[in-house]
Length: 350
Figure 1 (cartoon, rainbow, N blue to C red):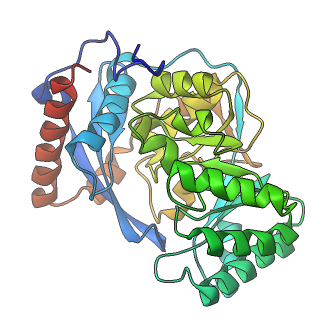
Figure 2 (cartoon, rainbow, N blue to C red; figure 1 turned 180 degrees about the vertical axis):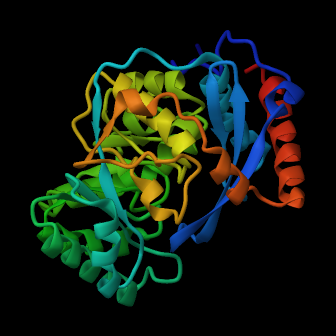
């Protein structure tokens, strides 16, 4: 254990060499229905280990240090597997990107009936007053179309304090379950949370980037900066490490996707199935944002839930792998990226 109570990456487990990891690896390129997180195509490297298929898909802008956590999660999935599940069904939310009000219904319909909806707000370039008005209108449309669903928003730390406070006071009128990472930094979250409490606004704060991007993922809990934490398997270094972080934080957790293929979603299902408590629907339905997936059928919820047993041993469809295979330049780029992440991971004694 480290000083903060979080185990290092792959604590005590053998780390396969890069050539073993890359044996049979394939990079896929999955187009998306709608721009999400600034992208319309999601690339991922799929690895095949003795325990099954695994995904390594850090976002392109992440360097070797951050990518090493994603690689640790892939090693766990493909070479060691996951803990025994504690439940057999996982509630799943829909995700509505920063689309126009006219497109909200189309996006929601692609998910079917779900118990909760996450709405993206504070899109880059649209975080000012006009953008807030668009966000409020989008959330209002979600509430109109799904009146019984829990509604949450995710700003990806795109607002400053004053904008976040004003936006959340308006959005609270639509009955928010919580607001995910409305501002940057742990201090920023703590200050905003205090301001919301002082204003009598019943909006809980969920920390995402302030957990997965910090060198100390428990600092947000110690600072009283959030009411719950959003956890994603790949950025946190695997299912077991994420479980340790949630336990040490002492806060309820929402398991979410890092815009994974169905192979990566399986790891999220494994985490959600292993948590002692799961009071909130999870953000594991994002395969609906892709035009095609590597699994046939994809890991998509039915009746607002994912079945655990069917999800934990994903096997990509050979035809889908052939259709979605990225070109050779991208295959080489990802192979070098994995080697760099492996070097970083082993250099720190993970």
